[in-house]
Length: 306
Image 1: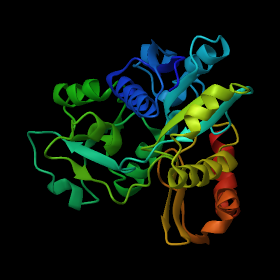
Image 2: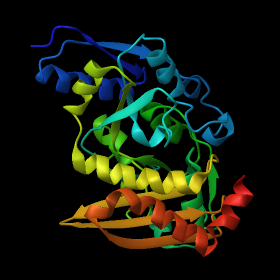
Image 3: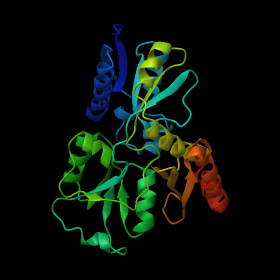
Image 4: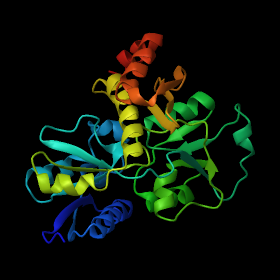
């Protein structure tokens, strides 16, 4: 029986708290005492501007890194899609929980039909704060417009009710975890999700062997492998800029099935790849496939984004 409490750092949104309590429950099952410590990030405080305007890919996560540095918490819980592909010096990404549904959902407005989804020449206003979702949506529906949508799960659903939009795009994982999937939700099986979408990641301070041992008990190998492939793809392409990049890896037997994409911000240009690789080579696949995207014209798109 472990008696020293593990302080779990988390953002204070309902979804983030759900994730932290889920980690706490799993640690308790291994005999640990836990304490939840909530903090508020710059990304949570400013919900008006699009995420890419806030100036950093770690906008939701830096405050938790700081809490680790200051020894205010022992581990930090993240939606891994929000966490930088290169953890800051002294921070280790040590656990990947089992993945929830990684895909995106369209939540249509409750007072209209969705026939327009079958017409690529239709016009509609769609809410999303993600440049990835915006670019993929506009590539498929070039006559649509997108509206900035930020905030927690409940806030976003409320904004749909308050605005004259035809729908909003949200991650299936967050809605499922909050038991808040609207009955009219439409699965976007064509939209390639953010790298590691649906995965809860846990970080700790480098050198904290007790925290590392606790985290390693929660790590799910298949989740770690697919997340790492996707995040390596992102890191190789990203080069420090925010870009509309999607990636999804799935493991079937000893093969990795992968789909990845890069778009221009307006959605007009798309580079999309579908690949298969051997599971034994998983640690090199993401970067290799990203280089293929770069060679197929991705460099020009990325240079424009910078």
